[in-house]
Length: 270
Image 1 (cartoon, rainbow, N blue to C red):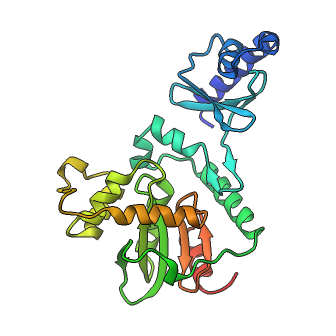
Image 2 (cartoon, rainbow, N blue to C red):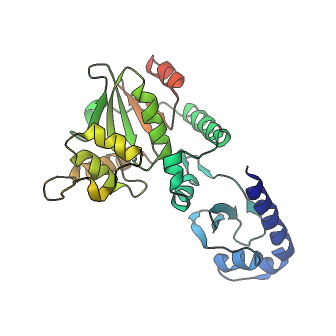
């Protein structure tokens, strides 16, 4: 944790302690209660609907969580066990878009999140998706043509998807990448599938180098309805986070995986 963020956390805790009595006696909207419990903190946004029992609180470029009465604070990430999804990362990306380009996510946090994903995934019955069920013509195909096939559900704004893409680039695999719109990325996905050279555009979009205005996408000349089919397929198969990988024999691996883990997973049943 960065020193200034630690100091902010301590300040927030102190403010909460001093004003907890006020929050406890309030019988008003939780958003008002949280703000009243932290009068010395400049809060730009409070969302008490997204996560049951917690309010998401944004101050500057930081995010923390509070109970609806403002008495208790949680500084860290919230992970949806059912959906295998980090609920904090999309908010941080909106607050600091440069994180997507710089990949500025701490290694310790990434490692912890990857471990959580793996433990949750392994604790459940294996999920399989048959390749013949995948959306027809819905993928951008790249990598080593004719090599071992792997399908990936990806979002152009997903930082872990970019990391996974870089790992797969160095492997002997043929990648079938299906783009879904989880982070408001449809225009970026359209830029890729409408490009004459889809792989080149994919690399540019993932690197943050190509403005949509200069991508040459013409809605009249390009049918982007396949993106709707990808979203519908994801919803029907409970795919709620990216990246998600599918092996040629239908095994599913949710979340980011490094090169060594991918090699082990692709080698057969775990």
